[in-house]
Length: 473
Image (cartoon, helix red, strand yellow):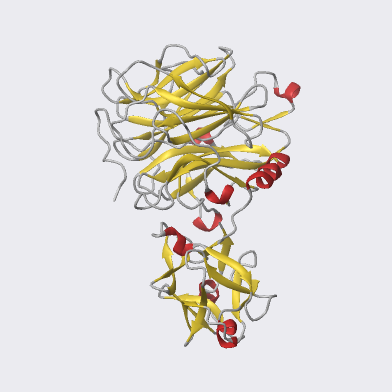
């Protein structure tokens, strides 16, 4: 069931866009700042990693739902490590007392400002003229919390994002709101300090309900605005050679995987590739990614789901580049999860989970989500191997019984310990992934068959793929 009503053309109840965290362009010339132009903003030359901001919603808006600021980090921009055990690092204390759509901007002085929608949960009739604001020097501490008022209209201020407009010498804050047009448009206010802002103007109005504006500034002299057509549930691109309100024209056809929202464009730090992220507008939305090497062409190719993962329960992500030191400091401050998820190689939308104490692979999102979280602990029968301890049933482990895998309580016997112990090896279908060989049946590996987990001898290419998993988060 969708957490959001169907798109409508009047004051709508759309999916609030996650904010893409882009640290935006510096006003000084690149040669003077030592920056590397990334199009979607300006990355420092030392940047070698990525940070993601998001909030969380579980399928039933229960356990795993939290409307605070969550952070994850990545070395490649595709595989993500949630920080603080996937718990929030800061939570609003004013307005609705929760946030959606967090966005982090690297400002002119190198520090960060965090913006977010003032909304907790899915009360689409809650109209806030304000957005949440924090300052941060390092994304490890957050200070100066306040709300910034953007307008006096009896409507919302959804999905704020900001970028530096060098021509104006000001930051532009764009967001979704309903004005006199009767449908959502992308509005803009200008500010120098994120404490006060100018009067609102219409930044982009395609003539239909448009939300979730995401800017990519200065690619070969062109600026790109990606947004969601809230009637069709597709992601579209508009472009302009200026940053003036009203100057953008739509130039792409729609990109979608089902009903998709929250476009986020990020450029790879190691190649000329751009990634376009979006997610489905349901609780526990599924992230999808496309790639392009030419924004001007306006065409995108879907990425293989093997190449990327999203933090569990994450919604409406925003991504920025960070330095290697910032990456290390964030992990040192908040810590990586004490658990893992295991993705299937040949069914990459599916993860290892237990259901009714039976081991299987099911499609994400999984409810309850903790059924798919595992602690890979030293093997019960051999500490050089591993055992899979359930996070939500910590007295139970995956073990084989008549070759089928099930979740059983540890009875302390040597037989149980042997049945629940597996040697991790290089993936049989891909050596960068993993396979798991049974300790007491060493000719057999964990594999899925009709989505159920078991241990079998492996010989064919299909069986090798069935027995290959990615250990991630």
